[in-house]
Amino acid sequence: MDTPKDQTKSQKPKARWAPALFLCLLCTTAFTLGAILQQRVYSWTGSGGGDLMQVLLGNGRRVLADQFFTTADIYFHSGAYPSIFDRQYPSTNSARLARGVQETPEQEDAEHDREIALLNRPIDWIERFGRNFQITKETHLSGGKEREILPWLKLSADLDPKRVDTYTVASYWLRVHLGKPKEAEEFLREGLLANPDSYEILLELGRLYFENYHDLARARNLWEAAYRRWNKREAGKPRPDLRALDQITVRLAWLEEEEGHYAQAIKWLKVALAKKASPNPEGLEARLKELQAKLKEAEAPSPAPKA
Amino acid sequence: MNRIRASISTIWAVSGIVIKELYRRKDFYVLFVVTAVITLMMASVNFFHEGKIVRYLKDICLLLIWISALVIAIATTARQLPAERESRTIFPLLAKPVTRGQVVVGKFLGCWLACGIALVVFYVFFGVICLAKQDHIGFWQYFQAIWLQWGMLAIVIGMVLLGSVVFSAPSANATICFVAVVSILILGSHLHKIAITEPEPLSVLLSSLYFLIPHLEWFYAVRDRLVFDQNLIPWVDCLLATLYAAAYVAIFLCGTWMLFRRRVLTT
Image (cartoon, each protein chain N blue to C red):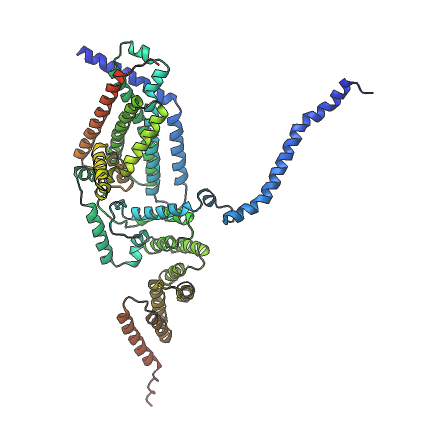
C-alpha cells in the first residue's frame, strides 16, 4: 500500500507536464481555428487575402489613392498648385494630369493661366509676404524629370487597382517621355488584370503597340477588343464615353488605311460618324470622302498594257 | 554691465541643463531612428527601374523631419516648468538667486538650442540621402531651410512655454499646442478666404484670427522649395521672416513671464 508520501512522488511528474500539455492543446486549438476561419475571413473582405492595405484601410484606400494621384499632378507642376480654397474653376485631377495626353497646348495654357491668375492675386500683406516663400511659378517637368511623378502613380495604383486613369497616365509618361515602353506595357497589363473590362487600358495598350513597337496586327487586335468592351460597357448608357469611342474608331481607321485596307478604314469612320463620337464630324466626313476616292482608285481595273 | 553678464551666464546655465536633458532622454534617438528607417526603406523601393527618382524621398524624409522636430520641440518644452514644480527643484533654482524671468528665458533658449542640434543631425542625414541619389545639393537652400525651420520652432517653443503656465497638465498643453500648430500649418493661409464667404460675426472672428496667429505656414513652404529644387528665397525676406519669428517669441515669452511671476509655486 502506498503511503501519502509515495502518492505525492508519483503525482509530481504529471503536475510538472500539465502546463506544457495545456499550452500544446491551446496552440493546436488556435491553429485549427485559424485554418478554419482563414477562408471565411477572406470571403468577408472579398480580397482573397494577402492584401494588407485592403485589410488595414478598407475603402479608405481609395481616398489615399486619389490623394497620391493628385500628388503626382503637384509634382508634375513643380509644386505650384492651387489649393481647394484657391480653385474656383473645377478641374478634375485626372483631367489636369492627363492634359499632356488629351488636351491641346492652347487649352492647357488657358486653364493654367486662369488658375495661376487666381494664385497671383494676394488679398493682404500677409498673403503677399507669404508668396515669397511659396512656389508660385508653375513649371512643368521635362527632360526626363517626369520620372518624379512615377512613385505616386505606382502607390496610387497599389492602393486602388480599379482606378483606370492611373495606369493610362503612367503608361503615357513612361512610353512617350521616358522611353520605357516595356515598363509601360507591364504596368498596363497589371491594370488590365485588375480591370479586365477596361477599354481605356486596351486603347492605351494598342497605342503602345502601334506607336512604340510598330506592331500593327497586335494594335488592331487590341483596339478591336477595346471597341467590343466599349460596346459592352458604354453603348447602353444615356451618356456614353464618346471621346474614347472616337479615339478607338479613328485610330482603327488610320491603321487600316496604313495597311491599305480602305474598305475597313471607311467602316470604322462610318461607325464614328453614326455614333456621333467625333467632336469634328465635318473633318471626319472629309476624311471619309478621301478614303472612298482612294478605294475607288484602288478598285478601278488597271489599264491594259500596250501591245 | 556686470549684472547683464551675470544674467546671461545664469540664462546660459539654465539652458545648458535643458540641452543635457535632450541627449539623456530617448525621444530624439527614437525619432531619428524611425526617420532613418522609413527613409531608407523608401529609398530601397524600385519604381519602374528608374534609379534617379529622388523627390518623393526628399518629400517623405522632410515630412518626417518636420514631424520629429515638432514632437521634440513640443514634448521637451511642455514638461520644463511643470517638471521643475513637481520635483520641487524650482525652489532651490529660484533661491540661487535666479529670477523667474531668467528661468523662462533660460528654458526657452535651452529648448531652442536643443531643437537646433537635433535639426542639424536630421539635415545631415537628409543631405547624405540626397547626395546618394542626385549629383549635387544646394548648400544655401539647405541653410535657408534649416534656419527658417529653426525660426518656426522658436515660435512653437514660445507658444508651448506660455501654454505650460496656462494649462494644468503638460499632456494637455502638448496636445493643444500640437493641434494648434498643425491647424495653422494647414489652414493658416486660408482663413481670410474662408472669412470672405462666411456671414458677419464669423467673418470678423476668422479675419481677426488670421491677423493674430503666427503664420507658421510661411516657414513650412520652404520644405516644398527644397523638394522641388527651387531658387533661393531673397535674403531680405529671410531676415524679415526671422524678425517676424523673433517678434512672436518676444510676445509669448513676455506673456509667460507675466503669468509665471505671479504664479504661486507651492502646491
